[in-house]
Length: 114
Image: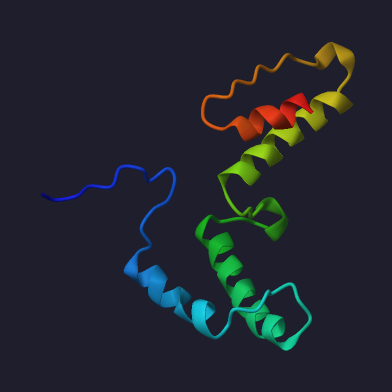
């Protein structure tokens, strides 16, 4: 029987082209690009090239227009916190109610209740 994977929301198979592109970062260039040691310094230019490719692909006029996160939970938390921060700084007359439900991820509910 052929198996079919239907949980691509959680994780998705890496394409062969992406796997080939990432091979050296899994074996020889694995340093943290934010670090000042040699491993990090070796990796930093590669990260810069990858980010520049993303910016060009989505036609981002400036790197400040793009926020790279580690995943969906971090991205969702950033959006929720940004909305609340904007509402907090808005005048009381322009503030709106926001309703948050924990349908998919309990983490988002904990962010708004803190």
